[in-house]
Length: 492
Ligand SMILES: [Zn+2]
View 1: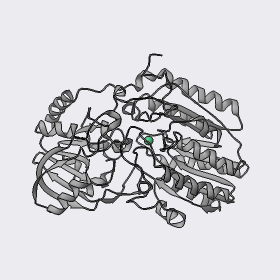
View 2: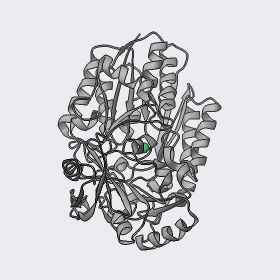
View 3: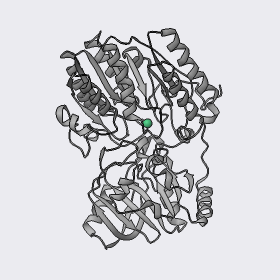
View 4: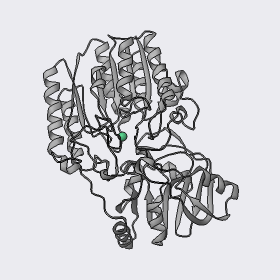
């Protein structure tokens, strides 16, 4: 048995000015790995790709791994990068195989096409019309009909923070291998509802998503090969953005349809629970100061500027408010500013300097210019920004923040990084010599994933409405291609 296994993952924020060349798909830049190098790099990690490789090895299959490409979210993927990655996968399938297993995100938009995954699957199907295709997807998939038509099995994450990527690979892989071994006959049903859940209300620590995902697991326990609710990625101006579901059963198309519709109806009935209303920033800062009087750590979430939703990670609104409020004993993770990081490396540890921080990237889709902030402080740490996740999310995977520095303003220790990384793992703080548990205020440019590795540190959580292309204020997002009407943008 010969299996083509590949990874091509990107969550595209169509409002983001952050470029997405091929180099963004490889840790630390360069070209994404392939073949044995990719196989060894993913071994032992929490990726769906790793699960595919383990299952294929256990089945004694010959593995062809044309590319392992995974990028932090950003703007539309460069056309050349898309064509390179898709071309590697399609060529490998065209050379002949018995099955295909793909680790995809589900919300990829390229410069020249709105449905990155649908187009990839269409091309794969075109060169191998009878070969089963199994796909592992992120919970933030925006599901198109093209994806459904041209795949055999789809399974998505059931946790947010995503701590079950590996398990999702196992679910999709198990169903596909069962088919290849003549032990199952997958029947798949999918659908959407006209709703655009806010990311800040999508966590599975809370309702309504907790109950939806629990129902998916019940269906799998009752015999579904895979049951998935995708909450969707709203910062994407594509026709099919929003909530969807897909259920795969063994040989029972009617049951797949019934269960899929049940999940969609359940989500639709809970639509008001997915609405998030931001609080004015001044109110959040006042609340944070009051909460801090009990001595526990107050987590301040700069949720409009999360690089894991395509944020530039360099807007200074929330950090500026912290500095203006004179917060003491605070840590901010992090500001993406390669220029400032280099300036601090040139100055050296112990140096005192004043520099324009952040705000280097304009956000033309939101009509916003970059707004740096002059900041003064002492350089207290310099590093190369390399670390390996402790987990539970993306455990064992390596990260490279590039030249990294910490500036201590006297009240706030600001981490400055040169490659995007969302703070969701304690190892990121180890890499810059900071113990976040000892901070009075911990500002994170994150929405939900921080809970994976840092959630237990928070005595209090204050969601701070700043600036950025992953804003939760839908009124700020100029949608043109999204299907309308859709809740909550339109009355339904
Ligand atoms: Zn996601």
